View 1 (spheres, rainbow, N blue to C red):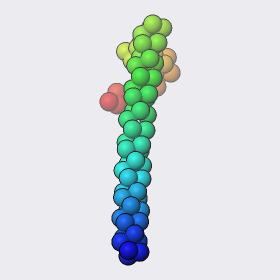
View 2: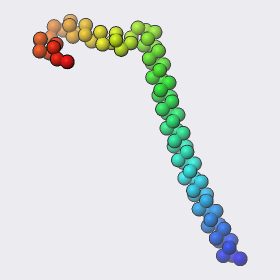
View 3: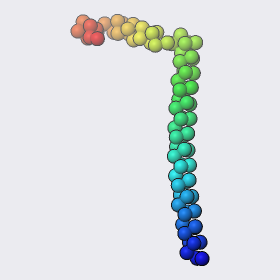
View 4: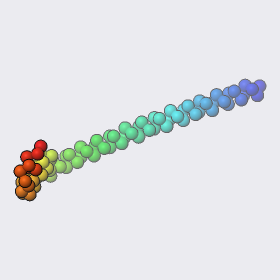
Length: 81
């Protein structure tokens, strides 16, 4: 009788350990997905804010071009891609 109880307890412990591993994996995956969603949402918000302020990437590139022109760099430096 005690052998059967010991076997039942052993099987329950193994089952519990498996469930705990599954829960950790599920939590890790969910946490990673939530982090990606937050980052995506924040990037979209920043993009929207930049558009509202007129700071889109084209204007940033143009700003750098203007700074380079104003710096009067030597010809080899200005002509590099």
